[in-house]
Image (cartoon, rainbow, N blue to C red; front, side, top):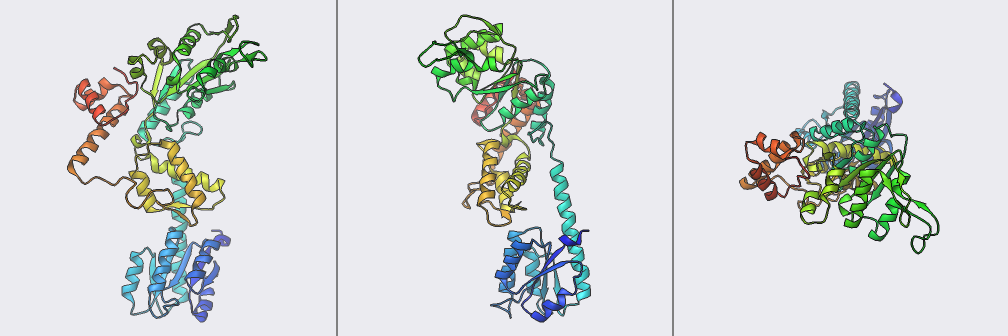
Length: 457
């Protein structure tokens, strides 16, 4: 092992014992502290793997209150540190309390430096083993495609579908709530396709005023309207040879839907104010968080356009539907942000992990990434807590329901989601797997306000 990185902090107010212990740890860089304030300062500065802590610290050298308070603060800042508590012969009660608070081991006075040295070496080896396991677990995160983290069965199935569809020119429709990663998956469709070396052009149909959207898509000729000072290509032309991504396609105005449909049928564009037909070879990928079938029934979306853009429909599950993935993503974002913010090593506290698992994440992966980024910037310790993540202590993160009706409803809701995911979004198959009829499935989905997207029949 690299002895240069082996650090031990000795928290002891007796100068003589401090000096004696220094000689017991020849293989370690030894730093010392005589009270709680200096111990915390040394912990922040040196990040020791092992700490020996005398419970009898000033201003309570004859008791254990200050030592136990120091223990709690040390572990809150560096939960992976191995703390060995040094106690008096007749202080078993406080030793047990210290173990309960998270100390790794207790060692009774009078101190045998040789024996303590062996114990410290074991503590260091255990710390390194645990750190290695944490590093390996992070490496186990599967990245089927660049930039996409997928560990749940639901997202792995989506990734497999993307990998199958990408090499084709099929017009694809990505369905999912805001923040689920639709643009990332659209880019994956492009990056894994034969068009990968050509342009990927993204247009957010909801972000551009209706009056400008047509010229943004199709371009315009000089003099077509006030301010049209020169001939300008539209984004469809600009994406020639590559991929055009129409985000929030459900927000397209009806008049423009008709023009887009003609392009998809004939693969030609006519600029605003022009007559020349321009052939364009482009793959079209669309995305929306809206229920297009419902928009069709209301007359707000063309049915023929829907069938044209959805040769392949891919439903992206919400984060709350991805089994165990929120905590994996949280650690991934935490590692990424700590490196970008130069914050050193940070870990999620237990209350933060519990809050992440319990929360429903209405903003999905985008909300999780933003919360982690803010927490990394704002935290001053070695742990990101639930409060750092802006979860209040009064139960903003959902607690497990104790009411029998709530438990039953949550189980039914999860069963619907699992069946839908396992059937690839086909409602008939999902209903059959649950032993219920298709109308019953729809009724239950409506009851629990589930967005089942544009599923199969």
